[in-house]
Image (cartoon, rainbow, N blue to C red; front, top):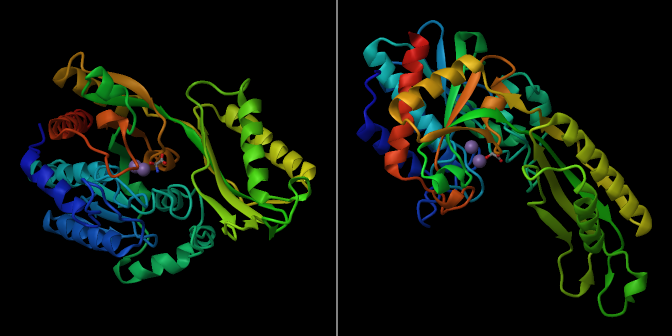
Length: 399
Ligand code: HGY
Ligand code: MN
Ligand code: MN
């Protein structure tokens, strides 16, 4: 077995948590290119160097610790949501660090990575999407966050760390350990999940423009209230999705901007995020049609203009059978009866990399299924169990 060191692994996880610690539970605030994110990446690069790995930082700010020659890549992302948990992404990054370090000690070449902006401050898994060639750096540079900051402006804060492009041909495959971010393993009392496939995603911004007016003197039947247009749109798509979606399909409006946002003004503009996910690419397409048709109908009915941003997306991806088999064999050997094969409803960097190389993922339970929130947590025994299954799977693949 690759001699992973659970105490060192846990100590590094808590050290990473200290970068952007929110002071609420174990929560973190470490969005891409924020000072805590950059400091965490500098610390990680130092850890990779101390482990004897070749350190590289690509133009997006993804940090690699590379073994000599070709090797398996193990990692995830260390940026967080605007309000994030201490384990989302961080678990996989520290698993990668610990495995690369223990691998070097055991003569098993393993490389490690922390991708940048997986949490999509600017897009959808931006750093790994650019690295895997789903998007050019130029296209990514034009993306803006909800405050209007461009990807180009934000990544300039890491320019001093960038060593240059990292060649994906150096890696034979990618393994990512991640918290489930859902309730199923925790509720079943199971220890790990081996991912079968990752759902696909579509994401865009939509804006209704009506007429800003006085909240007291504008009769209800004469308003062009952009917020009311958005609400009517939401109920229309929920109704029309009924015959299209399954219980696993999800759709979310997580960010809404109502302009000008005053108690006494009928909103003239409502801009909002529209994101949907499913394991079937055709269903994602049918949902897109419903979304676009419903928005156009509401705009016409209510005398509004409608604008939509470019749509970002990634297709559903199956995990590589050989890598997944190694994870399943290790899980059965170490945790018989306490693991399951399961779909990932969350998106991960593994989705981006599936275009380039074999990928597979391992889940550990999320307490009460909570994630993308300060309350996100996992029992440390489960974290260590996941590390050990990953280590045995790597060894099986190296064998
Ligand atoms: O949204 C996701 O699925 C990922 O956690 N960024
Ligand atoms: Mn994640
Ligand atoms: Mn996340």
